Image (cartoon, helix red, strand yellow):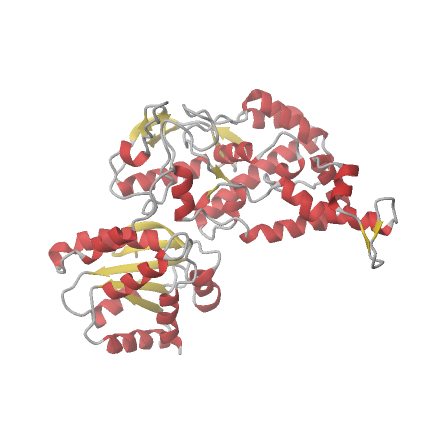
Amino acid sequence: MATKRKVKRISSHFKLDGDQSTFEFVDVALNSDSPFFLDPRAFRALRSDWGELCVSLLQSFFDAVISRIQSGDHAGARQLLGSLSEPNETHLGLSKGKPAGRGMGRGLAEDMWEALSTSDAAATGLLQDLEDTVLFIDGIGHDRISDITTNIVRQPLIEFTRDAAAYYGIPLAKDVASARCWNSSLQRWEVGYVDLPKVKTGPLILVPKCLVRRRPTFDPGEYLDHHILPILQEEELQAASSLVEVLKDGRRRVTKNAIKAKYGRSKKVAREVTTKHPDALNRYRSQSATRRQPPSHRELADILDIEPPDWDRLLAAVLATSSGKAHADTYHRAVQALLSALLYPSLVNPVREFPIHDGRKRIDITFTNEAQQGFFAWVNDKVVPAPYVFVECKNYGTEIANPELDQIAGRFSPQRGQLGIVCCRMFKDRQLWAQRCKDTANDRRGFILTLSDEDLTTLVEERKTTATLWEYRLLRAHLDALVM
């Protein structure tokens, strides 16, 4: 019997504290590729400035290629496509054994140029985004789109990697030769030297776990079956073609199997029908906004073959910490780990000691609100601006009072957000503290939710029974108490 190959992950290689549930990045294997992909559609769901930058880069590159093809500058289009390289730094994809991402390479770059340059989809403006090519261009699948996406957003991923390295204590190698990065201002690829982690296989780029997908948002088979075939069915019915069947009750129908037998299931069919019926693609785009969510903790565990979150252990680390100033940092780190797991994928990218007011003040933990549904999306859309959610950790042996409330209220602003969380150990008079928070809300100084050890225990119990938690009933109850 063959011996199972030992998997070495980022966390074990760099001896990191924590696990996949507390890391913002995918804890990939370093001696093979992990079967997740970067989906360009996932970036469009991000609300942060970082997400907008990535979308801008993706759109800029694709527009540059298409515009060159449409203007007849085929040499320029070939050059842009040919500069895409194999993104082995992320260790994502389908290859077995030693990582070897399926980047464009000269052969595929030439194939893609030929497909784009000879396709009506490019000439007629049907293709608007990189992910559209999956639906209409032969030979382009989600693995290749993932590779292309990685190339285009390499610079923001490098910046994420450096920030994550500082946050988790991953050492950086100085002046590592970087693969090409897309410069949207100059419309060209550039190379340079950057600080990055290094492993045996070379430079390492970390990827936010909220951006990877097991299956792409855009799926050519799904688009054909649910958006193209119904159009062809209706056309055949209207034409009273030979495909029409008359049922016993007099109803007329055309089956999808009959349509497939006549037209096939090729991307060519999707191109031709969409050219005549562009609303089909518009509907598909609009419906795709919430179709593919970030991977849950369970999905990450199953696909990476790792243990799911140990909620009891994460909670115990908080509860076991003694109160008092001497243990404040231990409490802060334990809360940070627990909340990073509990609030994912709504809140991501925690930053410790986030500076504001030119560094004169600091927030214990600042999360970016990337919620697409549920409690945190509702707050941001309907209650108060909450692009960021601020957390203050108070490891006091006594009750928190007005100074702690004024401290977090002073962190709020219309630009940064007006939703905060105070984590503390206990209350003797919770009703009094709740009234103080309500007064703050009524004075339009922001909404402050408070989580004691007991509240954190309740949140953990709620999370244990839900694969991906969006609603956070306890937090909603706390917020309702501030506005009722």
